[in-house]
Figure 1 (cartoon, rainbow, N blue to C red):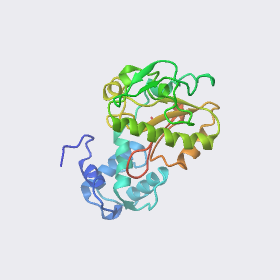
Figure 2: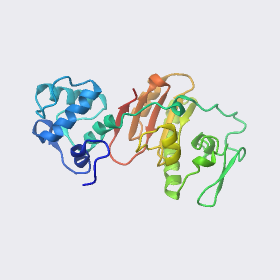
Figure 3: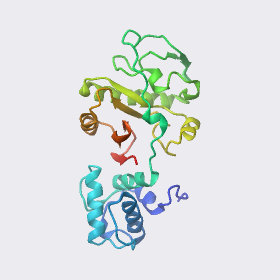
Figure 4: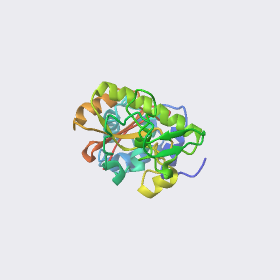
Length: 255
């Protein structure tokens, strides 16, 4: 097994398995890691002893409920992933708290503004829609067609299109303008702005969005009911993170 990047090697190994166990029957080392993460989350306040007693089981069940996972006593790969999101310690970066100025309706969807030549040979423009009829532009994805944010592969471009389609469903349900705080980042940009090491923004699958009318409660419920598989609750910071990663749903909070 590769060296753990988060310091929770047993959970990381379990995450890649197809196993499911009751928390009360999990290995001591895994339980210790779970207790450590639940304590970091503020849900568990007892000793880190590897014993899945009543307090551990209660905290574990509360955590699963908070991220909308069923089966409060079961540990599976999806729950392991959700727990490891605590270890990632998502920080709010300045980029996520700044919304792009909405474009005038007359320019949205036009081949105007700055341009980028993609690795596929296609040239896209700042005001051009990523997907026809979905109000999300290449400028919003690449922060104004910044050359440093030019998608680095065809796979990333396909992911951006996937995220745009997912965004379109959320936007249709919300039926009111949404601003973009942050979208695609290259590895270099992500490091510079202090993003999470394995951020879905790097793969082009993530968007940090903000309701122009300020109704975060309604937007959160729509995102929760959407097909996004990553949901970051940053409402108190001015955005909601959505992504379309592979695997089961993961929900996390920003400090």
